[in-house]
Image (tube, rainbow, N blue to C red; front, side, top):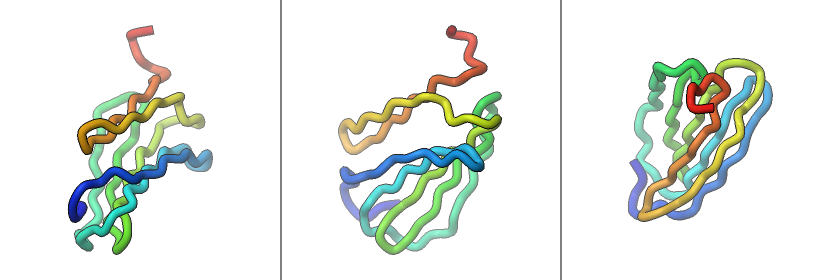
Amino acid sequence: MGDGNVSDYAIKTLKKPPRILVDFNCAARLLEARSINVDNPDIRSIRIGYHFDKIRVVIDIKGDVVPAYKDRFKHNTLIVTLKLKNSQNE
C-alpha cells in the first residue's frame, strides 16, 4: 500500500532469472512482502515488496525469455500487458 497517489514508476526486465520489475517511487508502509501464485502457463508468480521509498512488484516468468510487454498508466493505475508465448490468441 502506498501513501497517496502513485504516478512515478520505473519498469525494467532482468534476464536471469527472467522477470519484470516495477518500482513505484513513493512512500510506502513497511508491510510484509507477498507472493501470489498465478495460474498461467507463462507467469510463475507475482511478488510485492514494500520498502521505505518504493513498492516493488516482480513478475516472475516461466521459461528462459521475458515476453514482450506494454505498460501504460491511467487514473492512478498501472496496466502491464504481456504478449504471452503460450497464448491461444495468436
